[in-house]
Each structure stands twice: as C-alpha cells, then as structure tokens.
Length: 120
Image (cartoon, rainbow, N blue to C red; front, side, top):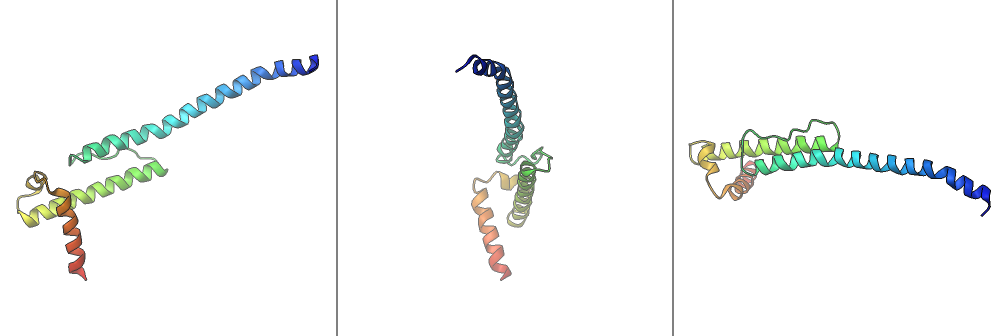
C-alpha cells in the first residue's frame, strides 16, 4: 500500500459508514412496516377464534397484507353466517346457543359436505 491508497481508504470510510447506517435504518423501517400489520392480523384472528362478532382485521392497504386481511375478514364473515344459519336450522334459537356447543367446527364441516352432496 502506498500513502495514496491509505488516503483513499481513509476518505471512503465515512461514506461506507453512512451507507451502512442508511441500510440498517431502512431495514428496520421495512421490517416494522411488514411486522406491525401481521401482528394486527394475528391479534384479530385470536379474537375470531373466540367467535367475537365485532372483530375484523383493521388493515386497509392495497398490498398482499391488505389482501390477506380482507380474505380473513371475508372468511370470518362467512363462518359467522354459516354458524348462524346452521344454528337456526338445527336449534331454532340463533347463534348464542350454537356458540355454546363444543362441536362447532365438525358440525360446520359436515354441513358444508352435506349441502354440497344435496346440490348434486
């Protein structure tokens, strides 16, 4: 190495340091932008597992995460509608009685299967 090479490395060090700092900050911002909506969807789905009627995924973006949130909301709405329909059909007393049942998901699966067989 000559003194000229050492000087150019010495001059490049602040530029490399700034580039590294910018890269780290951008990485943190992007990871937060992705992780926060996923955490919100996760919290919403935990409430949905309890069949809470007032829950939805509060993500309204037009990217893939927004599409996922809309699909989860649509799926949950369909699930609640199916439960309500099945409960009225089977017991005549509405969603409250059916939600108390420990057989919610097997009954829903059987309903969809029997409805598809009846349509044939």
